[in-house]
Picture (spheres, rainbow, N blue to C red):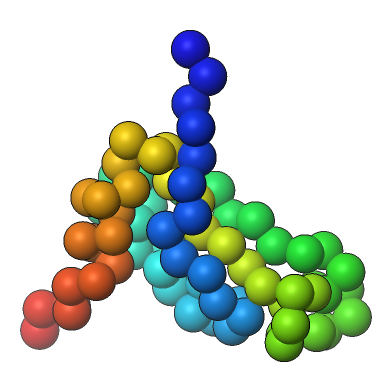
Length: 74
């Protein structure tokens, strides 16, 4: 059965994308990062060429959103 993926987070900031991806991976989620390659090659971080999407399997979307929405506990 083919798994459908859904966007849980979208940004044009590579550091922010990396942090969200790591947070989800640390929580045990399978994660896929999708970004425009030309934007990274040429250092574009605005508009569609700079957009980075973090995807999770669609059946885990709600749980993943809860993980990235809650603030880290100190």
